[in-house]
Image (cartoon, rainbow, N blue to C red; front, side):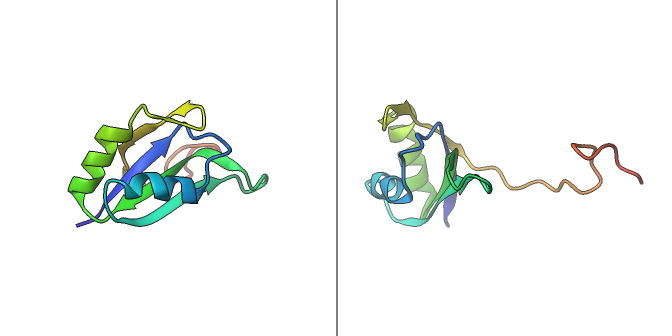
Length: 97
């Protein structure tokens, strides 16, 4: 079963290839995504790595959390599932329900 990790505090210089190469040291990387700003096409400083196994993800988190990559200490956590924003107060104001 695969496991997804959140990787934060990334330098703008970090590429998807950099992350894939680093995490491949700990096992098979199924997917690697940097989150980019829609208006700037620059990295927002975080991304997601999906490892083939939970064991590989745990080992990568243990080894790479706090490790320097392009001058920044990586912050790695288990990724949380997306939450539903429907019918919640937010930027557009309170719910009209």
